[in-house]
Length: 179
Image (cartoon, rainbow, N blue to C red; front, side):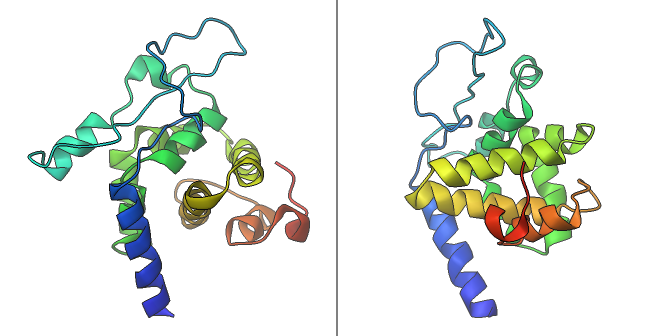
């Protein structure tokens, strides 16, 4: 079982190195992060490539979401920013509690979600929407994000038993969880 986990994590790490990540689930390039009205999506685009000369810390610094953008992001947009965070896989490279603490330091979106008051229903809804609309490689990242949120139970989030069933691999139909 541990061998399968290592293969999965290695595959995720390789995918993260060779892929671009877009924090709102859309791949359009937006020049501004200003929110014009209530229906407009705030999109933060993570760098798709990093210079070889940059340290990991410098790369993570390039993935920081400006405070003014964070303040305008909905829970759904923050969930997408977690899904698309280029260093999301780092959360599982050590033990989960330590990895999640590092993720909370490195991912502004994860930290903001952890600080929200009762975001759990909206997190589940965003993940379910992502599972219904995404495919291929992106669906792998959605699955990994579910695992991250599952392991964030108690310290960062307070999901119900049904929500935990969904996050641990169950489907919306199996668990009866509606976001």
